[in-house]
Image 1 (cartoon, rainbow, N blue to C red):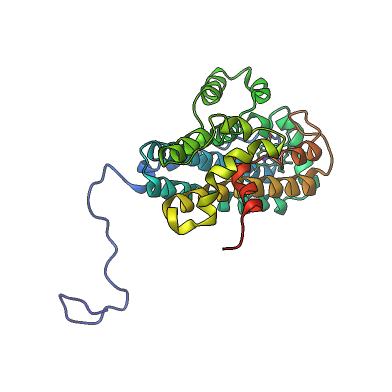
Image 2: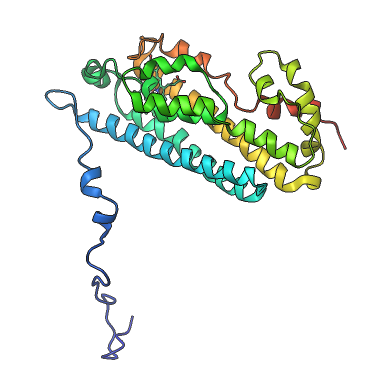
Length: 287
Ligand code: HEM
């Protein structure tokens, strides 16, 4: 690059010098000092791999925080019938979920024995106590009071979860959006999403089927609907990848939260936030 003042060629490029305000820097803005001081090892003497274990969980929690915020904004747009704006924010959640599915495998660089060297120190802390993960399930429509028991000693988390249980979730808001757009979604659609009997969902599926049968007639709704299915899909994929990592690391040992471990986790893989959207495909016909 040539130097504009000397007219000579400057092989090192322009001088690097900071400009602008000095009260806000990368480190102060992002609170890097605080952030990097939040990893407190429990092992004594400190076990090298515990840092990885803490960092990965903290990274998940930061992303959970973001997803919860984005889902709220998406629901606000759905309430105002702003379908493509809602799609925009659900899409962001899906992109984050894709990262979260991959990220869990970093833990496989830790050998099972290395994990055992500090695992006892974590008891009885467990993923069961991730209030943000449970909030994510609840806001997606997967509400289940049985998990509240893990937050008995954490009043703030418990209150947030109870609030989620009482508030309209993504399912409710999505079905209201369809109703606002003229689809005859039954009143009890959110309830039948919870039913173990797929037949109970048939009236809902019939009411929304045209979105899938003729996507071009309702393109924004089609795009949003498929993004919601994708969100559901990646949440399910996270469950499966987490199970594989758990099995690789602790086999069939009990969980630190007291569950049966892998077999409990496997029982969660059938959870779907929008079963009717998955089942709708069964009813589609050639055009
Ligand atoms: C070596 C790594 C890991 C092991 C061995 C492990 C093990 C387990 C086990 C056994 C459970 C069942 C509950 C219990 O009894 O404790 C569980 C649940 C859970 N874990 Fe992990 N986990 C690991 C990493 C992670 C990571 C990185 C996350 C990220 C957030 C995570 C999040 C969760 C969540 C949210 C649950 C509750 C799932 C549900 O109830 O559906 N785990 N984990």
